[in-house]
Structures are given as structure tokens and as C-alpha cells.
Length: 63
View 1 (tube, rainbow, N blue to C red):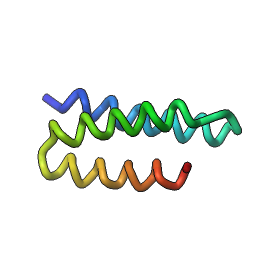
View 2 (view 1 turned 60 degrees about the horizontal axis):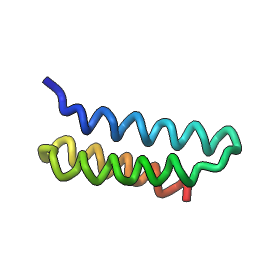
View 3 (view 1 turned 30 degrees about the vertical axis):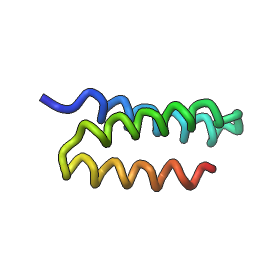
View 4 (view 1 turned 120 degrees about the horizontal axis):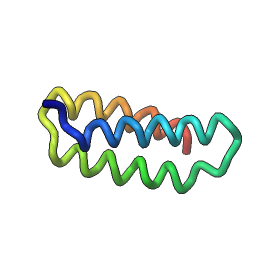
């Protein structure tokens, strides 16, 4: 079974990227993604943490 917090974090980052690409105010979705990444990171294994760091890098490009 996969980590639901990991899935939520990935979805939140994708949502923030989509909002930013559509020219919308991405601040709220970026903040939600940050919170989701933080929760997922604390409850994930090493492989998931590596992927979460990559998602964090993607999120950082939006700011």
C-alpha cells in the first residue's frame, strides 16, 4: 500500500504548478503544497523522501 500523504503531496504540487501556469495567484496552493510536503516527508521512507525533495525543488521554481 502506498503512502497517502505522499500521494496528497504530489497532487498538491501538481495543483500549484497548474495554478501558476494558468497565471493565477498560486500563493495559496503553494502554501498547501508546502504543508503537504512537510507532512509527507515526516511520514515517509528514504525512497519517498528522495522523491519529495524533487517535488520540493519543483515547488521552489514557482516562488
